[in-house]
Length: 253
Image (cartoon, rainbow, N blue to C red; front, side, top):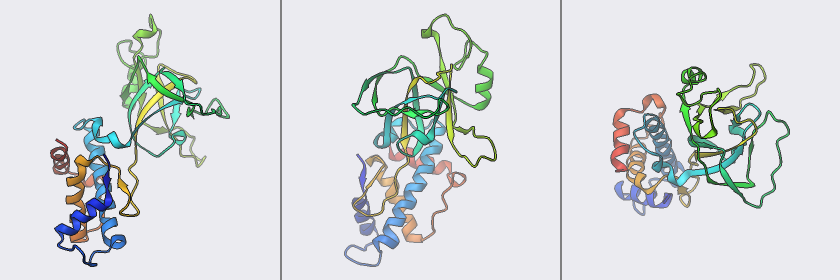
């Protein structure tokens, strides 16, 4: 379950010996410290997930599955997602779906992908492997690898793959539109995407922190560090250390 910000704030005040005092202001001290700790944890989780040291379970409170229709180039734009995407967890081509009762408005151009809010995912016999750009190029002509773009005996032998998000817009157009591409090509076909949304910073202590309760102690320790030392938020991927990842792994075991 998500963490109530007020619960974390109460624990912080207890540790600071500030219960009932106004030394630490919610708006100026507590909330910024919690948001800074959330940003730090974002970076640690991203790096740990990229190194395959944690599983998708850590994203359970912010994970969503949605059905999309690819463009004629077999791509899905991040601009059509219904919420900001933190990371892609899985892609399942050619899903079985059912209707939600919503009315779907087709995209204006076949160059555009679309979020199919009129459909929801039931099942799929396929999944897609994430490839690096180098693997994406090499695998195109290799029938034994995912992402092979040649002829196969039957659909059951297809092994799909997708690339990391990239901006395919021409330079000088002032367009930033990250897209993922899927192969073998699925031109204007249905694909289910599982993703984790970006945790929303809190604006009040009545908000929920969009991390599982297993991360409570990690957030508490880091928020306490920020508020105690007023060191500011210097968190970038470059400052995330192996020790940070170990702290995270220990907290979710």
